[in-house]
Length: 569
Ligand code: ARG
Image (cartoon, rainbow, N blue to C red; front, side, top):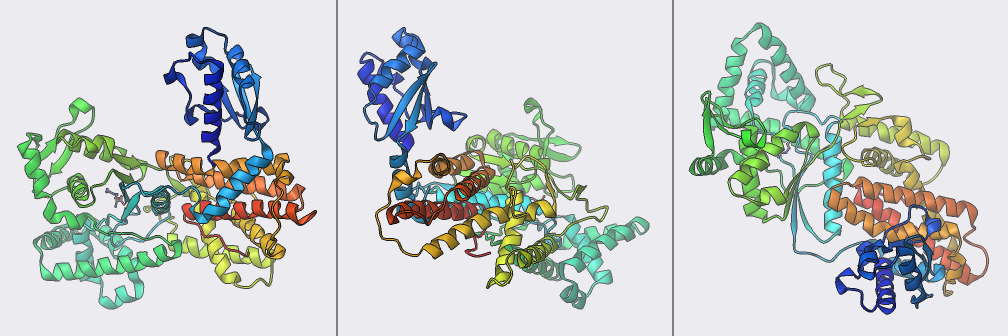
């Protein structure tokens, strides 16, 4: 049973009984119930000012009258406080409701039936010939989590890694490779070697401008489809993707498509033609632009004077292609806030082209910067933290903490991988995405605090309690869950689906992270004050049902943010 709905129904009935003349359109729905700031004030609150005008009555009087007509004490009772009706669930029945629901749903808790809608998510979107640095963490994890959340809520979710595989820099890379590189070197050094070639090119270019021309010439060759240029470039691409796969595998991240910038090489003609037809293109210093002065933005560059296309041109083509291909109802770009202007421009140009969906269905899901123990990431200064190294270190550190904490458990290495990587993921998805993240090892890996290991540990604790208890067939006596600590846990359990919905509405996986963390905290508080395996079998059965629901919901919450939940750690 959905408590919000049930209480709303109860309220409507009482309101109608107390005031038969109340206009029908004023009758409340579940969305009108508020959650009191303090649970001592009840489980839901209803403000009666809403009807003061129609009923010509002071809100406290209205509240009083309604309370007299409430007729389901087995569901909830109520108190009037000022203008509010404060509802208190029947504690035992509330426990039964929540726990039976979660028991029957299992990992399908909070799931919605398929809704026939499609969401396209553009995330990770790495650049060829570069190593992942910690800056890629947010887009990769946010996108992955949003994909799981939307899928859970009944959407068809398509994950796209829009590869950065186009641009003049690849001409330079080939020039550098021809001068100083070899297959052997790529085989041994991988993406790191590619990176080094790129850095060397830039250094030497300063004293040897002829190199720039060479770079341009190679880029032209790629554009013209020269077989040698394409073969070398293809090699760079394979190398980068093979490396990226190792990182994605560790994170458990997958994609449905890798159609990146190069894929749209032959699909931009349509965009340019259409812009011309719709009279949106303007010449500016030899280039073609869409003027956005009326929208208080700089012009959007479409075609450079030398005929080359731009990042925005490709994104316009990609948006139109995605609409045709997937018929999306939503298209999300999970990209750092530095690209705010770019996406505003792209969406606006699409809108000017007459695509109204650009306004209603496209969304730039922006996020803040990541720094590492107080230091900003910067490629130029060389203090780059690479994601593969970060994950490696996270595992090692988790392993050493675990060896100290619980030596001798089986499968420790595997669990340490899950815990180390989970800690990185959890920290990344803990706060509002727009907030900058400063990553500290001690904080992220601590077993007590707002961390992944803390939540995973709580899950493992539930597993071990359940294992120790074994099967108990007795009918649960829910009265044993009427205490405040159990009720706090139950409230969080019952509100978990709302957190998942809100996370999808605001593109904020952190709402799921927080809901899961709060649940773990409330459960530990309960666990600290109450013994599970004590008293009659019926009482034990009820407590174990609570433990099972917490285990299920924590595992689900972690799953939705991409984190695994080991049974032992
Ligand atoms: N590759 C780009 C970068 O690293 C991000 C691409 C984002 N997606 C897009 N459709 N523009 O900056």
